[in-house]
Image (cartoon, rainbow, N blue to C red; front, top):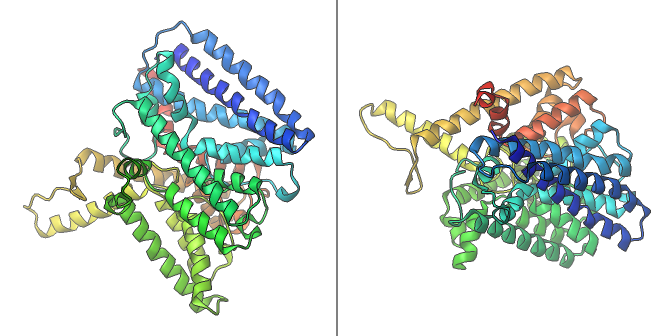
Length: 481
């Protein structure tokens, strides 16, 4: 293991984070806010720490192993959560635990918060929260990979360790640098289009840009306590729904659509088609139950709220126009359940991912057919593609670990003082990188104990790195290598 090289790469990311603090400083200067001073020390500290790590490892070996890649990714997300908490402590006056929770929630695009009174906060600080989610959405790791070849360092190991979804070996382009640049071009273009859509729908330029950052990243932070309900605008909600769905679809599919100029790829892709079908089914179910049992006199009103909340939850964005925790029947728990499905692999959404769920459903059905025809050879197919049995086994292994993490963290959350249902929803919202929960954590984690918030930080990091990356680092066999 090349610890000097690992330190050097982490140092580069600390330098990148320090540079990104220029943006909220410029926002503060534009609005003439004295709070810009809160970003100067964190910027200096990030740049100094990053430069020190880079200098220590700059003349060391440049071969990056798979193990080194996992270590870099884990250290980076922990380091970024810690560095991101610094401006929150000085700017918002948060305690260290609260600042760490808010920072981790931002960079992992979870959207859970401990802050109230956003409408009166300085815009530089509000923009900083939104920016955290935007960079976390695609991952500064991928951004760094785009420049690694210039430094003489290969980056495939980092991409494999950080990229969401089960198909980590696949690349959009033959060279990883081109892949990273393609991903960021698509990501940036979607952000610009989303900001323009919000502005045309009636948002101010500041709100439009800020909410586009948290929409395309499926983060869910808002500049208002009431979230999207603040705008009370069907046009704003429509823009949000469209871009939340786009952000939750595999960026590889976006790349194919852009390359061929053919939007039919969204329907040809098995995972995207299943995702959109699942969303439509849930919207119809929730909308009908709201109309029959809720305070809605018209179907279109119930479908409007159902569409927004279902899309917001299943994409793990967490925006809100209503408090779904008070919806009738089983709907609150249903929405928490569908957050476990999440978006597509290779997207900014959280959750288990549609492709994994699809593979597990298909394999379950195949096992039933195998019992009926014990001598038949029934390969597992995904569309026209035969799935490697090793991939199917890895999906079930991931699901087992995910389930174990939910059960264990829920028990610990109960120990931290939450009621059982509140504890389960708190774990679900953190592990699935969702944001809103039920009961005590329906709107904010402000009243949760420090132990509960720290458990939330662990859950958010596990969810963002899809559990396995962190478990690899914690394995004694990893360090014996």
